[in-house]
Amino acid sequence: MNDRILTPYEQTQLAKYGLSNQTVTNAIPIEYLTGKVTFCGLEFSVNQSVLIPRVETEGLVELALQVIAELLDRARSGEKLQLLEVGTGSGAVMICLDQHLAEAKIEYQLTATDISAEALAVAQNNAQRLSKKQPLLIKNDLLTGLTGQYHLIVANLPYIPSNQINQLDEGVKNFEPRLALDGGVDGFSMIKLLVDQAVSHLLPEGTILLEVDQTHDQQFFNQFSDQFSIADFKDCFDRHRFVRLDLKK
Image (cartoon, rainbow, N blue to C red; front, side, top):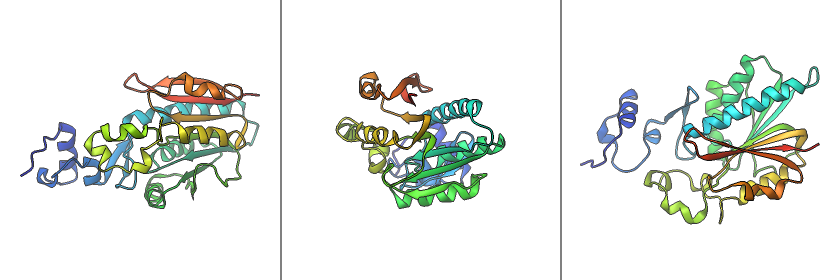
């Protein structure tokens, strides 16, 4: 007997993919049962190797497109935009950026990395179906060993403090990859390491865009203020969620 009460969204998703309510026997996210999720109007494949893309993260795409527009305004004639996503997971963010860039007929190179080979396989599958221009996918730990320099680095890294993982919804803590959730003691360890590494990987006046925990307020980022101009932004639920760091001249 299934005692789980499904939301209208969950019922719609099951029906869309021809699945019965009886398929749901525990707290597993519906997206893992259907293997699909809609993000920025595109349908992505997902499995338990990757975090399920959230509607909040669509704000990261919107901010990235704003930065790209600024980059184009000051780009030299014939200059190719160099873009990097770190921790790509399902590839949703990079593919959405690719779609917009391709439609705008912009010269660009999009590179995406992840530490998980299983996640990269999901990203590769999605890119083959949805990308206009195939990105360069690399199995890598943050920026370690990379030699490229970039106009824009985008990252949605693990940012949940370790002691809060067990307080998450069952569907998240029991089914989504802990590797993509656990950000260490304060949820900031990987973010700090990325920003420290990025200084030598950004082109002049380059930008880092981050999705962060709502507890990661200005005091977390003040340590970078000598090298970066810093601005924060809210998500669609009016929660502190994104930080932009622009390399100073």
